[in-house]
Length: 136
Image 1 (spheres, rainbow, N blue to C red):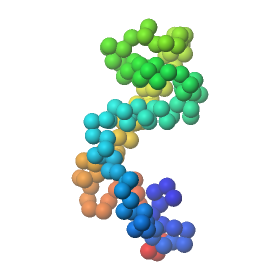
Image 2 (cartoon, rainbow, N blue to C red):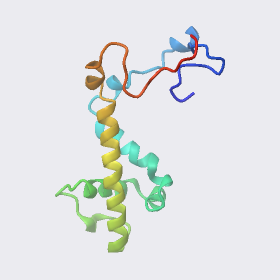
Image 3 (cartoon, one colour):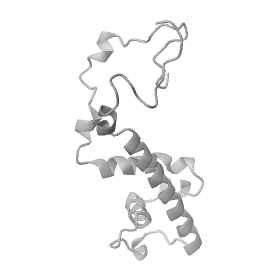
Image 4 (cartoon, rainbow, N blue to C red):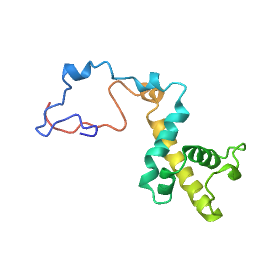
C-alpha cells in the first residue's frame, strides 16, 4: 500500500480495531527521543547493501562503520588510522563521499518529517500526501 489510503476498489482503507489498538504500536517520536544518532546510523546501515561502494562495509565490523560516519561528518576526534580495515586512500575517499551524500539525504528526510514542521501545517494537510479523486 505504501502510504496510499485507498484500496483497489476506491474505498478508503481502514485498519481493523484489533490491529489499530495493538500494544506493540509505538510512537517513534517518544521511543527515539535522545537516540537520534542511532536512528540516523540505521539509515546508513540499511543503505549499505544497496550501494556498490558501501556494500563491502556490510560484512565488516560495525565500529568501523561508526568511525567512517564520524569521518564523513568531519568529526575532529575521528582518526583514519583507527580503522581496522586497511582502506586504500582512493577507496576511503569514495566511501566518505557516499556517506556524505547519505547524510544529506537523511537530513532532508528528517527535516521533512519533523513533527514540529508537520504541526505548523494547516489542519489535515501533509506535503507528501494528496488524495486522488476516488470515492470514499
